[in-house]
Image 1 (cartoon, rainbow, N blue to C red):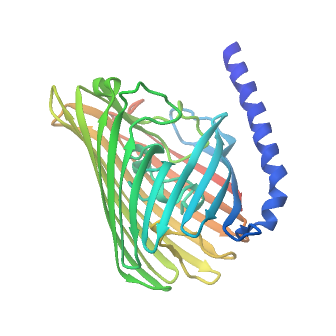
Image 2: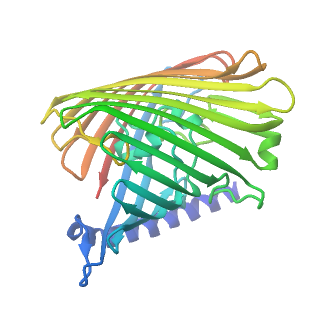
Length: 392
């Protein structure tokens, strides 16, 4: 108990210091919405930041999940461009009572080509490319959360034209929040996105991705996939409903495919992800998941926008009201391997309103259910959550 109080105290003090810096620098950012140039013109910079405030109410559940309000994400960073072809970013975040490193990289861009080195997400998964501000619903899908990964240190090459985007990178399997031994393994990830139809009013986006990884000794002995409800209100330890432990791993492959379609104010997005673990003893293991997500702009200019650099849909313009639906299933059961991690399904309805370019509000209702192999057994419950977000 004393240790928990000490951790909570440190977390509160850290948050106060972080928010103090955030608010101190906020007036500068109002001036620096566009890139600010140096007197010589060879260096430009702007500040970026966000704060997301979430609250949720859980009901009709046998596990008696608690209700609450949290600051789900706070960011503060700066983006720079210099010497014509160079750019970079340094960003810190506050979450779970600690400050952590987010995107920290330097990139060289020439035409449609880019070389990038630093600490950032692998070229894998759809929602991981976009970030929390651009999630259409309040959180990424459970499937993305289970089969995605943290930012890694590495380097990559990206080719991004109007018709296609290809990317490939090599990354350390370690991360800055969990320091490992020197023998920490590696990740090779690649993606391809094609846009056979793309203009201001309509889009057809088709993507595929593959990821191969070798792990350190501890993870080769046992690796775990786990997932919870699509919410940030619950703590990480509390929010685990499906979980599998896989022993005697040799290596791991992950595969993904995604599609995005929109026409004016109507939008559809779907993604399928799978993880295949080769094992030295026992049958190989495969876990998988898929979701389908749809949106409709009720009023405003009723026009979705596509960010080609990120390969995803951006937030609509201010004064747009957005209605959303998502069905997601994540299955960590593998009968052939004899591994039963549980199956989780959820249906989420959402409504977003973008007040202005800095502020938005979101409201989500989710019905979720699990099978008998899930953590805690078979159950179902509902929850409502809302978010107030501001960014610059």
